[in-house]
Length: 465
Image (cartoon, rainbow, N blue to C red; front, top):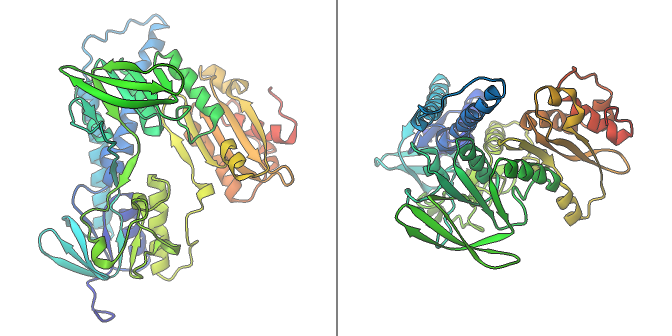
């Protein structure tokens, strides 16, 4: 096709966080964009991921707070509790935001095709209804699906994926969660909150193994106090489905193999990119370890085709997809964005109780890479607000350069950690030093005072410890 003869400047396959943000940003910058989506606008995050799961987390915490009311002498009658009402509230949140994305696309005059799509060539996409659309550039933003491990295939009844778990209208009495990463611990938090007997099995030595080890310990202690059983350093060997239960044979790193039994098994061992059926082979794009290989500005080996979000080998997080979509759109519009997301400036967030949030280097990473560092930390219990609201479990921890005191990374475990982390990240990205936070007046009493005190600890003058 000759220049100027395309239907659109930008054709985007997928209306998840990466796709819809790329479309809106491109339109803001004067490009004509369309989005093709076979399901609902918003992708996994809005429909069967971040948003409904956070609604369930909120409601689980409301349900758990009944114990606090009882501690004040209030009698709470739980006999009429109906989980289906919880499910409906989570779906309402998801549907509201999905409709919100559809509205934003319409408001920005972005054409929306509800269809499956596949690449036909470097500038053409075929829709499942037979239509073909062309674009000067194409973005593949098809997202991911729950990863299947052999021998533990989903059936949607006894063996569940995260998708299935979010769509449950009735909770089991007991569940085994295979996988102790952020998805696994969030579901453990939800189900335990509603009274389900929960067992978490994690292959690596601790739950949330990519987070700071001390923060992981904070969460593990809290879970054990709540009666959540944790089997870390344990491999699941096989499962046996029976009427009404699932038995999983597990092998700890040390000790004898054992059987764990529960009503249902939830398998959450990561997510696999959705790259099948989208015509990558037709344009000569070959996967690397399941992902679409990309260079700067997320361009594939085909110059007119880009890939963002969960289909590329960057952290599978909605906010990463947001930023990648913005980078591609700005690049195509002639702006000069950074060519890639800075992996050390990506916040991670685990939304259980206590929460965990982090960015940059953790100790285990710095040790692996031989990065010189020092560390400082401050316990939540030293901040008066944590005592007042009975949320004393937690810590703020910062890694910094021994010579310059440059912030290398930070981790927070405790109440509102997923909000607190951004003060430290803003300092890092603005090239501020711990002393800048240490000397800034923080409102009292707030949990953010723990951030201030951790930074004072870097300088050797923490007050409340």
